Amino acid sequence: MAFLDPAWLVLLALLLDLMIGDPSWLYARVWHPVVAIGALIERGEAWLNHGVRRRRLWAGAVLTLALVALALGVGWGLQHFLRGLAYGWVIEVALASSLLAFRGLHRFIKPVERALRLGDLNKARKAVSQVVGRDPNRLDAAGVARAAIESLAENYSDGALAPLFWYALTGLPGLLAYKTINTLDSMIGHRNDRYEAFGKVAARLDDIVNWPPARLTALVFVVAAWLRLFRPPLAALRLIKRDASKHRSVNAGWPETAMAAALNIRLAGPRDYGDYQVNDPWIGDGPTQATAQDLGRAFTVFWTATGLLALACLTAGLWAQFSALDLMQTKLVLIFLL
Image 1 (tube, rainbow, N blue to C red):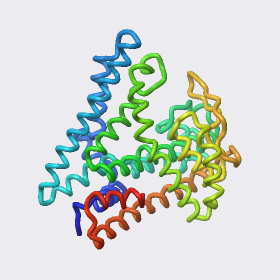
Image 2 (image 1 turned 90 degrees about the horizontal axis):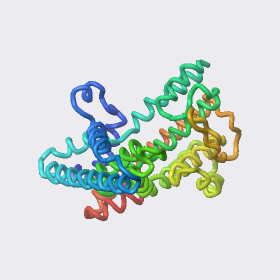
Image 3 (image 1 turned 180 degrees about the vertical axis):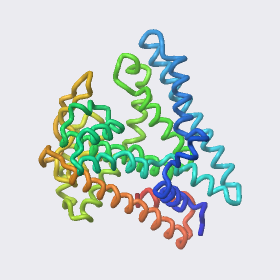
Image 4 (image 1 turned 90 degrees about the vertical axis):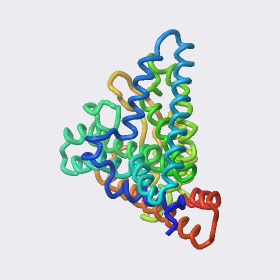
């Protein structure tokens, strides 16, 4: 088996993440790569984020571009070194898998479904507060279920499929750069007095790198829903075309609308974040009263979509192996199948 072929590397990283995720025993002893990235961002922000708005805008841009350049350089150096070793692919797969969040996403949101099925609203609120920013104490059972489904859909795109996509396309350099951009956005890409200027470049860059994966996630969800007999694909695609742009995020509306279409419910809409409220329009055309059963079906879409990604990687690997494709051709086949 050509383990250095990108399709096999991507497949193995995906499978390793599904099997073990981020082992707590390991990351209690060493820094997780994202924790290390976050520490650099935190120090840079404390050092640079002061002064007038224009200065903070430029300082945030410098920090963002410097950290992305560092990630690209480190990724290129690691990839060059590891692919020169006889079994360097083992370390590369382990590193890549640590930057995927398929298992972690399931681990954080599954307790919400369990609590809702047991009718324990307080426990469900506490569980959902780990993954969403809205005020959990103001959510009823339907609101908790909707929040969990929205988080599952959006984070599947930027926490699971997007890093897999950029790893398939650009290897470790692109994967590390993507995770750096995504972490920058989560830490400094907020629209408030402290970060609106300083994090503007990070937020815009995050929109750019998540543009293709968000739309790809929507398509994968459509196929997954069709395979599970939840929603015909043409009806789902029409709904996505109608409602995805209603979302305040240029990217999040795509996977969320696809999930709403798959489950025949409505998502987004008015939301309470404690110190402020948003009055966004609803997306989807079903009822707003989401249930634990709807969240369970969302997990069915989640796992079916993940199986489709694994199948795409396997198909690309076999195609490359038996068709004697070169590296660039293999990457194109893999991206096409993803």
